[in-house]
Length: 117
Image 1: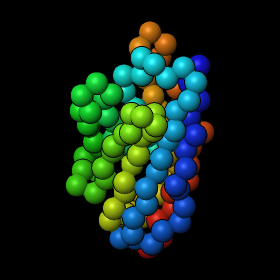
Image 2: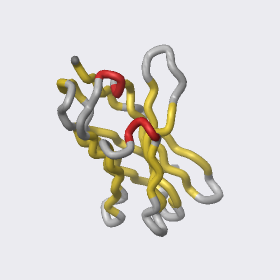
Image 3: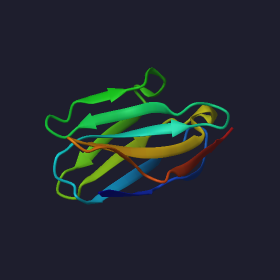
Image 4: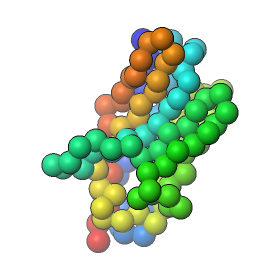
């Protein structure tokens, strides 16, 4: 099993920045991708950004390109999401997800991000 602990959410004004962190523990070998998703009230959960562990290839939702940056620290089994130029529409619960080869997906409990206008 993989346990995920997220941190870094909070309340910020529009235009501000936050950095989310997600630390993985447990059986962390064979994790081949890490990422962030978000779910706003009344909406489906959507991809924000992902990063592969082998080559650090990143993928972003169009709505966050140029404003958010995903990165990881392999030694700490931690993935980060730097969020800049935040907008009210970025308000959501942000979830960390890791994909482990032959084992599937593991999700964090979520961290609330609220952007005030």
